[in-house]
Length: 144
Image (cartoon, rainbow, N blue to C red; front, side):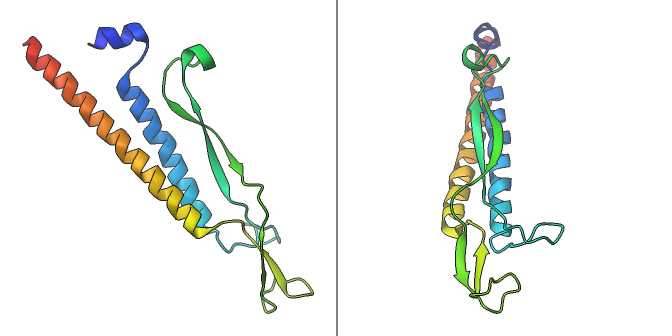
């Protein structure tokens, strides 16, 4: 069975493992978005409103991308260019003269939905790894 997968240049364990790594990056990115839901300043203290980040995946199909292996990879993490939230908080230190504050474009319900989706994808890939291992073990039992 391993020779069959090698001849196709596909290893199901590599595919699922790459997806686990990619979805871990996605979950970390979502957690970072949630942690910065009200961040109006950068790490140096400048008035630089946090922008929501999104993870872009790419496939590892050797025919299409020239990669050695199949699977999923993180292509890049990009800032979401949607409009910032503007709320009226006249007592906020970053409020403008009219009392409005620009806040991150992070929407907590959307982030929670994305987190559940990424979590389910992570679980599905763990299940795929377990099924693949069981198939390999059954094949070895048949051969012995």
